[in-house]
Image (cartoon, rainbow, N blue to C red; front, side, top):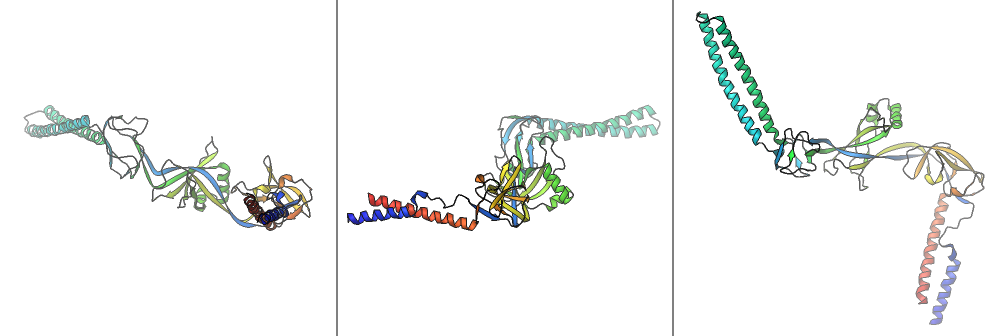
Length: 398
């Protein structure tokens, strides 16, 4: 039994040796063997990503129009409210008293007006009968006019007092969601307060604001002619949320600022997204993803290009030698590939891997991507076999 076990261990060792145990799972490439791709045009869509800030369709800061202490909070943070709903109440005792006083002044002014009117009408009859002179008639007429003005002023004061009383009941100007509530009952608030009492955000539709640089704006203008046309032709955009997920509804560009910010060199752009489930929140951050489709693009993986300052180079293959050649790229990319805009043509062959060890004019042996993948797969299978055999040998040795 021991002899059979010994022979099995020896056989496993010979298998490991025959599999090239010293290769450690590396592909069996020769020193001058490189992966080469023949460049052909293809349709592709790249995605440009821009940071964005989310705002509600209507974000309204709430401040009272009168000063006073909060006597009652009628809502909670995050609560859905309707237009006209009372949010909080400011101490209204003084304002209610002023309204009653103004109302009483209106009643007094009405009584005074009626008395002045009777006096004036009586004076006219007396004047017609030559009982009083013109001076007495004019005095009665002026008193009547003054009583009219007094009533108008009293009514205006009453309207103002009533309005101030209503201002004590602070109402929502829009339907939306309540934001933070930094103040509680007993806090002193007023029209000049720096921090708003709260914010009401209408979030059935969310507006995502991001920026495009001046060059991108100019390119759109040259292509479409006007900003209005650019907005109309702009493709639907996506929204990547803070957790990395893509929002389920696509958005539409609805506005592009016609003014370039001098300090940043960018123009503000707004994209609108439906928000029926209220997943998106005003004040949140996200990323706008703009697709850009190219019908006939020459694409190369980024590892196939060498960058020297602001220039890009590839190694073309001519015969069995490489040529160090400059190319230009589209600045938009997906993080993995570049679109070559000049320096290459369909049918050119380019080294796409291991370019760090190449030199201009160096002779190489080309290998296709398919053959490369086969070697990689063979190496993986070999490595797995070696690992399994090694584990078996260790188990039998115990």
